[in-house]
Length: 197
Image (cartoon, rainbow, N blue to C red):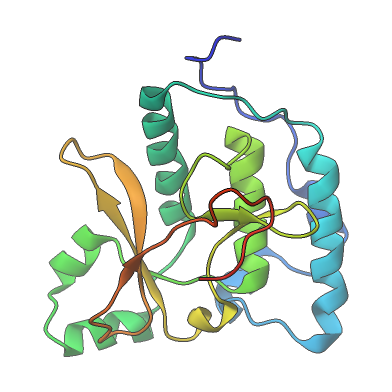
């Protein structure tokens, strides 16, 4: 495979992970990433599974133009998996945003910690290593995750940032509906294990 080639989709699925946890996609969306102390073991099982899955994919170095295309595809898949709750949508409309603008801007709720890990696991299996894409870090167990504080699941929003040619290259983070100091999600440069921003 040359540096300009995009890796084919991974053949493995999350079946093995779901088998070892009680979390389903329906439950994750319904609960918006809530996790109790009794389910913390499930999170550890998930990350242990991620270690095994990560060993099946070899990180590759791509040309800049390929990284831009892969970044767009990763973020597009990410946005498609996330949801905007009716409550957050109503709050956005209450501050003056039209429904058309909300849809066009692609606002999404920030994921919970467990959904963050599961979603990034899907992306890593589909696109390979995510270390070249801003916003992704790795946990001490080797699992990929978005560089978001877990507390943001309750009030935070994400929205894609596009280039002039329409490619999504960044995610903008809003700590709350009225956040006037939103920021671009970034990784911890030069470290395997990232720290929350």
